[in-house]
Image 1 (cartoon, rainbow, N blue to C red):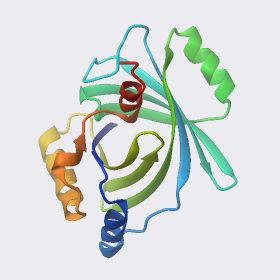
Image 2 (image 1 turned 60 degrees about the horizontal axis):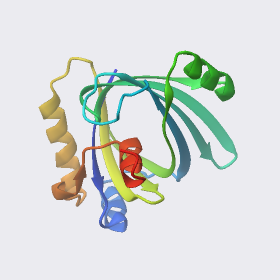
Image 3 (image 1 turned 180 degrees about the vertical axis):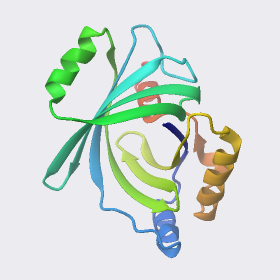
Image 4 (image 1 turned 90 degrees about the horizontal axis):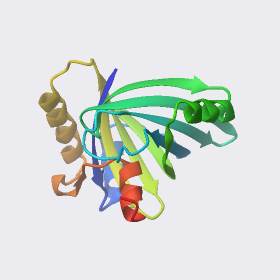
Length: 184
C-alpha cells in the first residue's frame, strides 16, 4: 500500500476545526501517539533515501493502549511512501528484533492527534511539543498510482479548509524534530 500525504503548519487550528465541522466531518477525540523511528546506521532522514524506516507507534486513548509496527520506504520523498503496518503484542520483544537486524534509533517523539475523514482522504490535526500545530491530508493508494493527481486532490481539500499552501512542510515529524534539536 502507498501512503501519499501533504503536511502544513497550522496558523489557525480553530478555523480548520470549524471548517471540518462545516464540511460535515466528524473529528475524533484526541489520542496521544508516541513514535519511535529506526533507520539503518548512517542513513540520514530526508528526501528519498529509498532505504526502509521502521516505526513503533504506541497510541493511548483514554484507558486504551495499542501499538503498531510500521515499515516505510519512500517512493518520491518523505511524504510519499510504500507502507506496511501491523499490530504489536510485545513492544519490548519487537525492539530487540529491530536492534538485532541493526536498525538504530532515529527519533522519539509524542504528538496529540485528532482524525477526521472526508471521502477517501484522512485529515490529521497534530500538536507536537516544541514544533507546534500541523495538519496532514493523506490517502492510501495502490503502489503504482500517479502522484500529481493525488497531491492536487489533497491540496484542493486542504485549501477548502483554509490551509495556505505557503505553510506546506516537506519533512516528516521525525526529521523536523531532529532538525529542531540540531541533530541533522
